Image 1: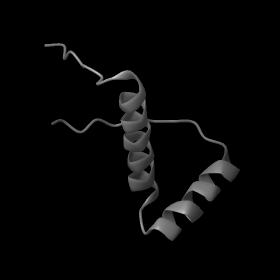
Image 2: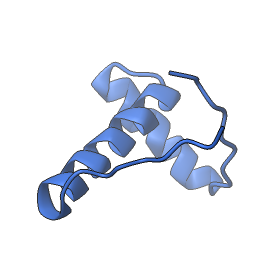
Image 3: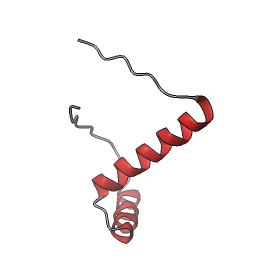
Image 4: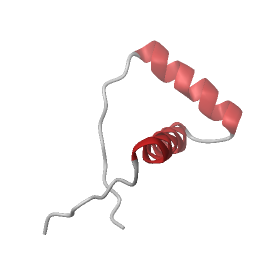
Length: 57
């Protein structure tokens, strides 16, 4: 699986809050974001079924 990079715009206060939560959970901010994305996808798939992704060649 390839690792891709993603830039986001985020308010400074929200980023500071993310760092607090990540530190509490023992994660980096990046790892916390990945955790939250995975959790969101799992919840979506539980409600609406598996997401099938088609890769471009």
